[in-house]
Image (tube, rainbow, N blue to C red):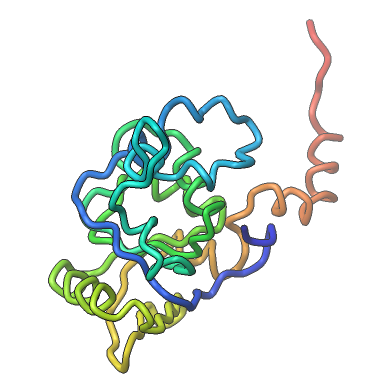
Length: 202
Protein backbone atom coordinates (compact mmCIF):
# COMPACT_ATOMS: atom_id res chain seq x y z
CA UNK A 1 0.00 0.00 0.00
CA UNK A 2 1.12 3.55 -0.71
CA UNK A 3 2.25 6.02 1.93
CA UNK A 4 -0.61 8.48 2.31
CA UNK A 5 -0.10 11.81 0.61
CA UNK A 6 3.02 10.84 -1.35
CA UNK A 7 3.21 11.72 -5.07
CA UNK A 8 2.88 8.70 -7.35
CA UNK A 9 4.77 9.01 -10.63
CA UNK A 10 4.47 5.41 -11.79
CA UNK A 11 5.75 1.97 -10.94
CA UNK A 12 7.94 -0.78 -12.27
CA UNK A 13 8.16 -4.54 -11.97
CA UNK A 14 6.59 -7.55 -13.64
CA UNK A 15 3.07 -7.91 -14.98
CA UNK A 16 0.27 -10.46 -14.83
CA UNK A 17 -2.44 -10.56 -17.53
CA UNK A 18 -6.02 -11.15 -16.33
CA UNK A 19 -7.95 -11.70 -19.54
CA UNK A 20 -11.66 -11.15 -20.05
CA UNK A 21 -14.12 -8.30 -20.61
CA UNK A 22 -16.62 -7.04 -18.03
CA UNK A 23 -14.80 -8.43 -15.00
CA UNK A 24 -17.05 -7.08 -12.26
CA UNK A 25 -16.34 -6.27 -8.64
CA UNK A 26 -18.10 -9.41 -7.39
CA UNK A 27 -15.56 -11.49 -9.29
CA UNK A 28 -12.70 -9.35 -7.99
CA UNK A 29 -13.83 -9.68 -4.36
CA UNK A 30 -16.81 -11.95 -3.54
CA UNK A 31 -19.62 -10.35 -1.51
CA UNK A 32 -19.00 -12.46 1.60
CA UNK A 33 -15.76 -10.56 2.16
CA UNK A 34 -17.48 -7.16 2.32
CA UNK A 35 -17.94 -7.48 6.08
CA UNK A 36 -14.41 -6.16 6.52
CA UNK A 37 -14.47 -2.49 7.52
CA UNK A 38 -10.71 -2.11 7.80
CA UNK A 39 -9.94 -3.91 4.48
CA UNK A 40 -7.29 -5.96 6.29
CA UNK A 41 -6.77 -9.41 4.82
CA UNK A 42 -8.60 -8.60 1.59
CA UNK A 43 -5.50 -9.27 -0.49
CA UNK A 44 -5.84 -12.99 0.23
CA UNK A 45 -9.42 -12.97 -1.09
CA UNK A 46 -8.86 -11.23 -4.43
CA UNK A 47 -10.46 -13.28 -7.26
CA UNK A 48 -10.98 -16.00 -4.64
CA UNK A 49 -13.86 -17.85 -6.31
CA UNK A 50 -12.02 -17.85 -9.62
CA UNK A 51 -8.80 -19.04 -8.03
CA UNK A 52 -10.15 -21.79 -5.75
CA UNK A 53 -12.97 -24.33 -5.80
CA UNK A 54 -15.41 -25.06 -2.94
CA UNK A 55 -12.78 -27.27 -1.28
CA UNK A 56 -10.14 -24.54 -1.60
CA UNK A 57 -8.24 -26.43 -4.26
CA UNK A 58 -6.44 -24.07 -6.66
CA UNK A 59 -7.95 -23.59 -10.10
CA UNK A 60 -6.12 -22.60 -13.24
CA UNK A 61 -5.80 -18.81 -12.89
CA UNK A 62 -3.00 -16.33 -13.62
CA UNK A 63 -2.70 -15.38 -9.93
CA UNK A 64 -2.10 -19.06 -9.10
CA UNK A 65 0.54 -19.42 -11.81
CA UNK A 66 4.01 -19.43 -10.19
CA UNK A 67 5.38 -17.61 -13.24
CA UNK A 68 3.47 -14.50 -12.12
CA UNK A 69 4.04 -14.94 -8.39
CA UNK A 70 5.81 -11.62 -7.84
CA UNK A 71 3.89 -9.53 -10.39
CA UNK A 72 2.88 -6.07 -9.18
CA UNK A 73 1.29 -4.75 -12.40
CA UNK A 74 -2.05 -6.08 -13.63
CA UNK A 75 -3.08 -6.12 -17.29
CA UNK A 76 -6.85 -6.31 -17.89
CA UNK A 77 -9.32 -5.90 -20.73
CA UNK A 78 -12.52 -3.94 -21.36
CA UNK A 79 -14.85 -2.52 -18.66
CA UNK A 80 -12.83 -3.85 -15.75
CA UNK A 81 -14.38 -3.22 -12.33
CA UNK A 82 -17.98 -3.01 -13.52
CA UNK A 83 -20.99 -3.93 -11.38
CA UNK A 84 -21.46 -2.70 -7.82
CA UNK A 85 -19.44 0.23 -6.57
CA UNK A 86 -17.75 -1.63 -3.70
CA UNK A 87 -14.50 0.05 -2.74
CA UNK A 88 -13.29 -3.33 -1.45
CA UNK A 89 -12.41 -4.31 -5.04
CA UNK A 90 -9.48 -1.91 -5.59
CA UNK A 91 -8.52 -2.32 -1.93
CA UNK A 92 -8.22 -6.09 -2.41
CA UNK A 93 -6.13 -5.66 -5.56
CA UNK A 94 -3.82 -3.15 -3.89
CA UNK A 95 -3.45 -5.26 -0.76
CA UNK A 96 -2.61 -8.28 -2.90
CA UNK A 97 0.45 -6.30 -4.02
CA UNK A 98 -0.61 -4.66 -7.29
CA UNK A 99 0.81 -1.16 -7.79
CA UNK A 100 -0.76 -0.25 -11.17
CA UNK A 101 -3.50 -1.58 -13.44
CA UNK A 102 -3.41 -1.21 -17.22
CA UNK A 103 -6.54 -1.99 -19.20
CA UNK A 104 -8.68 -1.22 -22.24
CA UNK A 105 -11.26 0.58 -20.10
CA UNK A 106 -12.50 0.76 -16.54
CA UNK A 107 -15.84 1.26 -14.84
CA UNK A 108 -15.92 4.90 -13.74
CA UNK A 109 -16.58 4.26 -10.05
CA UNK A 110 -13.90 1.57 -9.89
CA UNK A 111 -11.38 3.98 -11.45
CA UNK A 112 -12.33 6.67 -8.93
CA UNK A 113 -12.11 4.29 -5.98
CA UNK A 114 -8.70 3.16 -7.21
CA UNK A 115 -7.33 6.68 -7.57
CA UNK A 116 -8.23 7.73 -4.02
CA UNK A 117 -6.17 4.88 -2.56
CA UNK A 118 -3.20 5.66 -4.80
CA UNK A 119 -3.72 2.82 -7.26
CA UNK A 120 -3.19 4.17 -10.81
CA UNK A 121 -5.46 2.76 -13.52
CA UNK A 122 -4.39 3.61 -17.07
CA UNK A 123 -5.91 2.70 -20.40
CA UNK A 124 -4.18 1.47 -23.53
CA UNK A 125 -5.38 0.94 -27.09
CA UNK A 126 -6.83 -2.57 -27.45
CA UNK A 127 -4.49 -4.01 -30.07
CA UNK A 128 -1.40 -2.77 -28.30
CA UNK A 129 -2.64 -4.13 -24.97
CA UNK A 130 -3.34 -7.57 -26.47
CA UNK A 131 0.14 -7.53 -27.97
CA UNK A 132 1.61 -6.72 -24.56
CA UNK A 133 -0.43 -9.47 -22.88
CA UNK A 134 0.86 -11.98 -25.42
CA UNK A 135 4.44 -10.89 -24.79
CA UNK A 136 4.08 -11.15 -21.01
CA UNK A 137 2.43 -14.57 -21.19
CA UNK A 138 5.26 -15.78 -23.42
CA UNK A 139 7.92 -14.32 -21.14
CA UNK A 140 6.72 -13.32 -17.63
CA UNK A 141 10.24 -12.12 -16.74
CA UNK A 142 9.85 -9.02 -18.96
CA UNK A 143 10.41 -5.90 -16.87
CA UNK A 144 7.64 -3.32 -17.16
CA UNK A 145 7.94 0.37 -16.33
CA UNK A 146 4.97 2.74 -16.11
CA UNK A 147 5.69 6.46 -16.31
CA UNK A 148 2.72 8.66 -15.37
CA UNK A 149 4.59 11.85 -16.24
CA UNK A 150 5.30 10.74 -19.80
CA UNK A 151 2.11 8.61 -19.87
CA UNK A 152 3.86 5.65 -21.38
CA UNK A 153 4.62 2.04 -20.55
CA UNK A 154 8.00 0.58 -21.43
CA UNK A 155 8.59 -3.15 -21.71
CA UNK A 156 11.23 -5.21 -23.46
CA UNK A 157 12.55 -2.27 -25.49
CA UNK A 158 9.08 -1.19 -26.68
CA UNK A 159 7.01 1.83 -25.68
CA UNK A 160 3.22 1.88 -25.32
CA UNK A 161 1.11 5.01 -25.01
CA UNK A 162 -1.10 5.26 -21.93
CA UNK A 163 -4.15 7.40 -21.19
CA UNK A 164 -5.75 8.68 -18.00
CA UNK A 165 -8.08 11.62 -17.24
CA UNK A 166 -5.89 14.61 -16.40
CA UNK A 167 -7.70 15.22 -13.10
CA UNK A 168 -6.74 11.77 -11.84
CA UNK A 169 -3.24 11.99 -13.23
CA UNK A 170 -2.57 15.32 -11.50
CA UNK A 171 -3.97 13.97 -8.21
CA UNK A 172 -1.51 11.10 -8.33
CA UNK A 173 1.46 13.22 -9.38
CA UNK A 174 1.01 15.88 -6.69
CA UNK A 175 -0.16 13.58 -3.90
CA UNK A 176 -3.64 15.06 -3.63
CA UNK A 177 -5.20 11.61 -4.22
CA UNK A 178 -5.25 11.30 -0.43
CA UNK A 179 -8.12 13.51 0.79
CA UNK A 180 -7.29 12.98 4.47
CA UNK A 181 -3.74 14.19 3.94
CA UNK A 182 -5.14 17.26 2.18
CA UNK A 183 -7.19 18.06 5.27
CA UNK A 184 -4.13 17.63 7.48
CA UNK A 185 -2.07 19.96 5.31
CA UNK A 186 -4.90 22.50 5.38
CA UNK A 187 -5.41 22.36 9.16
CA UNK A 188 -5.11 26.12 9.68
CA UNK A 189 -7.56 26.92 6.88
CA UNK A 190 -10.00 24.33 8.22
CA UNK A 191 -9.82 25.73 11.75
CA UNK A 192 -10.28 29.26 10.41
CA UNK A 193 -13.40 28.21 8.53
CA UNK A 194 -14.77 26.38 11.57
CA UNK A 195 -14.34 29.59 13.56
CA UNK A 196 -16.53 31.44 11.08
CA UNK A 197 -19.35 28.91 11.10
CA UNK A 198 -22.40 29.46 13.28
CA UNK A 199 -23.36 26.21 14.95
CA UNK A 200 -26.11 27.72 17.06
CA UNK A 201 -29.59 26.30 16.65
CA UNK A 202 -32.69 28.44 16.50
